[in-house]
Image (cartoon, rainbow, N blue to C red; front, side, top):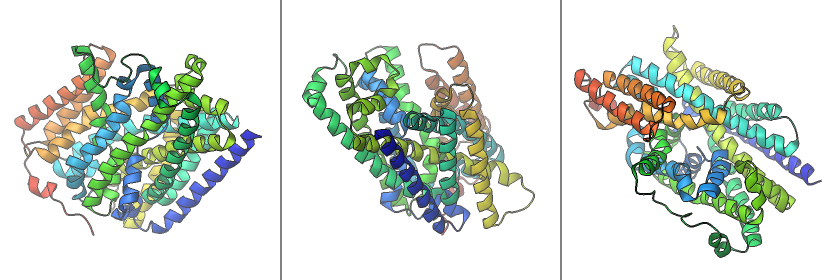
Length: 474
């Protein structure tokens, strides 16, 4: 009987999400409305949609599993690195990016560097999102299958269709509105579950007392290998995701530069504080059901919920989990679709598109990308491994060209191309042939070297001030 109530609640929630997408469609009158919500999001929507960008199954399930097993040092990348990214965006990037008339990083690279840099960077960003989006579809499929008993493949299909529908109908408006609602569901679900399990486990003092020595250490051991891994964990998302299209679209969707900056700080604070809740829940689950540590660690929370709680708590938890997955998946779907339409299709069409034609192209691109991601999600490959590489690709290939373009006048197109090439190829080489230093740090160093080499060999010949001070469209 409990399973029936849980299934009914999920169906109602999904139907409500689709209705929100239909409602949001009334605000979509142009391509800019679809891609960046017409640059009209107020602070509360802008902050929650930035928070929800990556707060998905990897945060609730993956980070919790790492925390229970390895302690604080196991979760530096997620959630600490993710929160760092939003703080850095607010402090150094949001105001500068908001001042530009762009929909994608490819737009800026074309103006600041060249068409060739636009094309290469857009292809890299498009490919990096494929694994990430597919992983969100898989996470949805696994959760839906575990709740309803349907096959994972059918669960993936249902999730992909639902996310495709409300993203395609309402674009960034639909994502922003659903992110706000889903954030409320996430917080309530985790708080209810946390209170239930913490009470059953005997309180905070008992749970903390039963952790091993060094569990809450925040700094690494004083040796090169540990310190370099620690730095890499901070940078993987902390720096890598700064150059991610989903972050840019949320910055550009804010109604003013002040809102963009403030929402970045608030989103980072929310990420850091709300992500702590499932970590504590994981420790409580370990205290109550230590036998669950013998199974897949990522399933410790769902298994505990099904073993220990009543129907109401189950509905709240799985509602929170599915909400987190949906919010991450929708942003992972819209961002590369915008890049596909704006930078990989539109420049090579023979005619200039009207705004309505561009809007149709955006929606078609969402459909195309969703189909490709769905196919990848059903391949017998390590999709979660692909997902983990998304921010790393951005870090070793795109972070340096973006930062140099914004903060170094001498940065040139050749420097950007060499930075992408050196960074990516070096990272791949050391992924295949690992050494004690993390491959992403070596890739980042190679990317910096490529930028310096190319920019001194062939300085950029353009008016840098005009490209960095582009006025925002009305």
